[in-house]
Image 1 (spheres, rainbow, N blue to C red):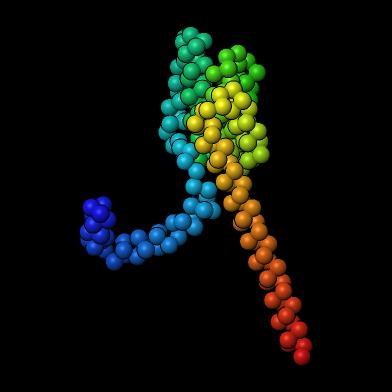
Image 2 (tube, one colour; image 1 turned 90 degrees about the horizontal axis):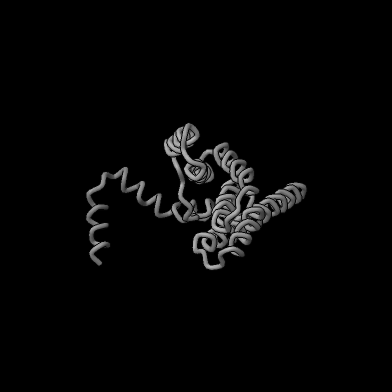
Length: 186
């Protein structure tokens, strides 16, 4: 109740333009979330990617192999969580190249998960789902992988609904055009 009252006070103190923006966001917010997927995966900024690249460069100058691997994993994480498609593709390439050299199941699980995130961000949902299943074979109760699996399922469902909507609209427009042309001929 208190939160609702605070929201009302905040709303009443806003300018007319910002009140209109609030109303528009209330109406269109759920639509945008539906179309975009509304997943809970974090995004990284270009600054974080640059920082991780600098860390890898520093690690290559004299860190132990473990230190190098950790900095590369952080960079891979930052890349697949980037909003830039080219960064996501770089992250996928780095992870795929390093996956064969992975000996521990924990590292393999991490790399499979990050690959799944990268493919999810790239829109390759079936490949992302395959990698998530492999990840869950290693750690069946891992919450991050279970959340990603649900996000993939939801996204595939939403894409199907949107595709059906587009198809139905197209058919409706074609049928409407045919009916309109028949009516004009009479």
